Amino acid sequence: MRTEPTPLEAIVFDTDGVVTRTAAVHFAAWKQVFDPFLAAHATGDDARPFTDADYRRHVDGIGRYDGVAALLNARGIALPHGTPDDAPGDTTICAVGNRKNAAFADAVVQHGVLAYATTRRFIESLHDAGVRTAVISASKNCQMVLDAAGMTDLFEVRVDGNDVARLGLEGKPDPAVFLVAAERLGVTPDSVAVVEDAVSGVRAGRAGGFTTVVGLDRTRRPGPLAEYSDMVVPDLADVCLVDGALERAERPRVRIGDIASALTDTDLPRMLEDRPVAVFLDYDGTLTPIVDRPEDARLPAATADELTSLAQVCTVGIISGRDLDDVLGLVELEGLWFAGSHGFDVLSPDGERRQFEQGAAALPGLDAAEVALADAIEVAPGAWVERKRFAIAVHHRASAEADIPALEAAVAAIAEGDPTLRMTGGKKIFELRPAADWHKGTALRWLADAAGLAPDTLVVFVGDDVTDEDALDAVRAEGLGVVVDTEDRPTAAHMRLDDPSQVAELLGRIRAEVEHR
Image 1: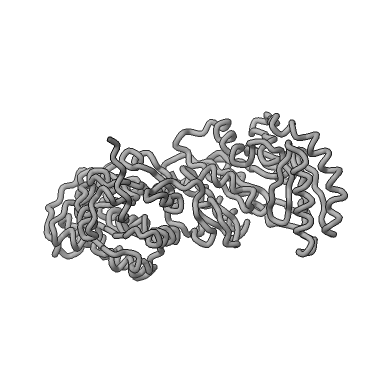
Image 2 (image 1 turned 90 degrees about the vertical axis):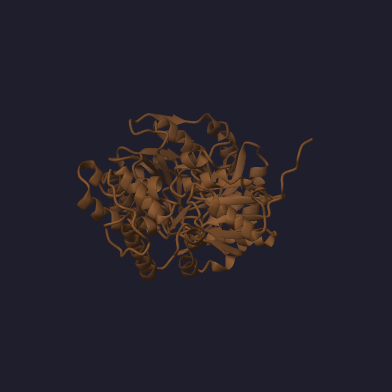
């Protein structure tokens, strides 16, 4: 007889990297302590600087004394353990750990703590559904961090480093801290889920027999988390509660206002570290500002220089809704991939051009629609038609707002009258495209394959419009999506930028990270 699963009663959340953006603060504090220590106490390769890989492998998610011992052991350094009362210094494991704690506390006081807005939204939705919540941390600073981030009100129970010390609990991957949280909630592990961003944490969740273990992949390296998790997601916006169980959401529940700037998000350097990178971008509104006439959207010299430099160290491509020849005329740069007409027309860096037959099948319908639109746009004075090879754009930037609904209805009627066409929208445009399963997202996947990218490549896509959401969706699970917009609308992006000038700055930062290796 089949046993029905126990309904989800509670979820236990880790703190750093799940509730608060403190993983990078912890990393910076560890680096501040370890780099001079290693320079003074190690030789040869063992004296190399502390890296994000070291952080993830040796100290992430466990108590700081255990972290010190693990890192020093990996570097061939032996220190006595000492006692927790040791003054911050470098003579014992506890002294080094206490030095790190002081550096972390100073950083919190100086810079504050940011919360993940999407985590708050997710937890509030759990409370609405009657699911209880607890938070755990290996750090004794957990309460200070939650207070600084304004997230204390979300949790009924907290189990932190003070409890670990007082109760003599083993650190992760032992599940003790999660089990204590469940006990204090008065629930059993088979009705509790665990949310963690560290390998040691998901291992603990699995070892404790919890009903669901969710791994949050903040650095886009899902493999290690996947071994012990029921699902790995980039953010809690990608998880939803369905019939009392956690499931991966079909589309992330993210708004642009929820996400951090790519220029300040401390997860970005960790994503870029020690791996190949490929960067693909939209053109209008992303590399250049939106202008009244498309022919005036010229690539700024500074942005062109950044694209050229970046293409020397990684794969770079432009995926635009413009005709390919139009894009090539505006971006006279070598070494890039180009995809025009939302990906129906592609040019590789070696000059090979390919047009996909899915778009060719709609050409007769587009020709007929172009004729019909000449009369249809009269309902909105100021609107004009731009014919592309594989699409038709109806621009209404110069039309009165009151006339837009009638124009939209007229364009929709033309699309509905031809099964080879579909209507889409964008910033101040309506567009007719081939009704084929091909868009910027499928084009991006095709380009990544055609470029021969290594499996561990971080694929970055930067776009500004709703027409770019297909590509942002394509990189949601394991890549990086950046939206260039200040409107607080839904998006599949992970990070945001305000305008094209910031895109040029982001390209420079990515190039610097890649060149620094």
